[in-house]
Image 1 (cartoon, one colour):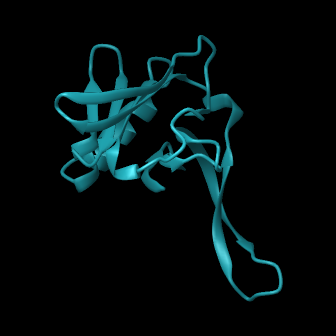
Image 2 (cartoon, helix red, strand yellow):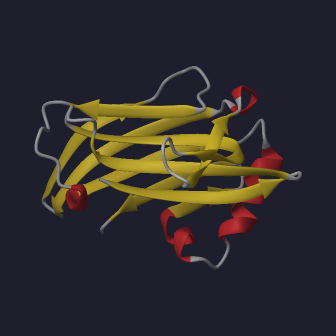
Image 3 (cartoon, rainbow, N blue to C red):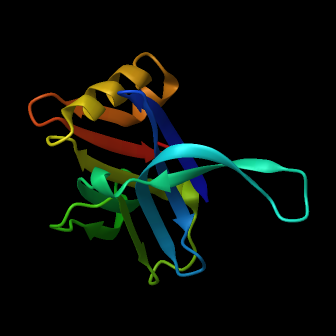
Length: 154
């Protein structure tokens, strides 16, 4: 499994976009993208440890697409799944049990988030990743306020 996150602040509210790819709960190859807010600490049972917990924001559902490919080389690429729901999402996920021996290093996840209805969030995310390593995975489409995430070991 591999994961990445994009943390940003919009109008005083902290947000994170989590991305994930790998063995989807032993169900085969999978990936997901989620938007979360309101970070706070929660305690772990029977320990003094506390971890960050992010909540969902039901008012932050956006049009999302998610695609997963296994990229072995330029001449050998498997389409694991393509998911383009019509309804807005705060979290999008997919898996394919036919690909039951996932190698995260072969996986290329491509995601799309349409921020047309939340242009301030789009601008805040773009500003937060400017000139950072994570910006290598993102393409910002100014015309549609759409963010494309292309993530893998390519």
